Length: 188
Image (cartoon, rainbow, N blue to C red; front, side):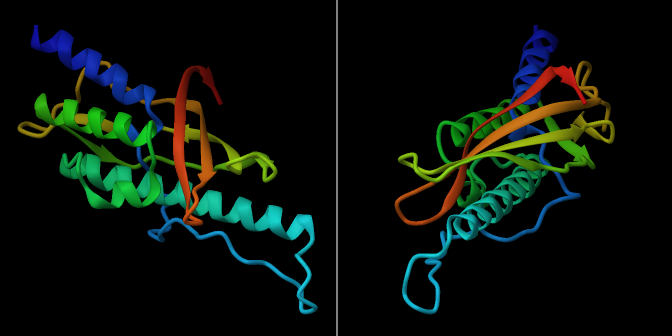
């Protein structure tokens, strides 16, 4: 019974981008705040300046999210405060539950995951503003292991898979990642 529950937890962990955090692209910076971009004459900045600022803030939040998730998963700490610096619900709760499930089964994440995210869409006119991110996550060096004996959890194998995430600008100006998915059926 325990094996089946753990496999179910592994599937859940693999389905959530945050459950496969990264070290390679982590910036360690907090989610970037929305800049008050303006030209010297006091007029609003050009739309391309706003767009570039949104893209940078979203990618910084994404990198922070992956780094925070990796740290929390490696420590088996679903309540790690750094998670809420980069994540918002519903993804925050999904990540916390995935880490908690792994912890309850004595498993932690270890290794290196490679990431190279790109922005695929920016919607600054939406309320709230959003930025869509696409990534090809390389999970070949990233494993879910049993903490007690360091054995790899069956079914937690790697590969390279498409990942998508959405960064949303919140009323306080922060960009947070609030949705994400690992598309195991879409290798990259």
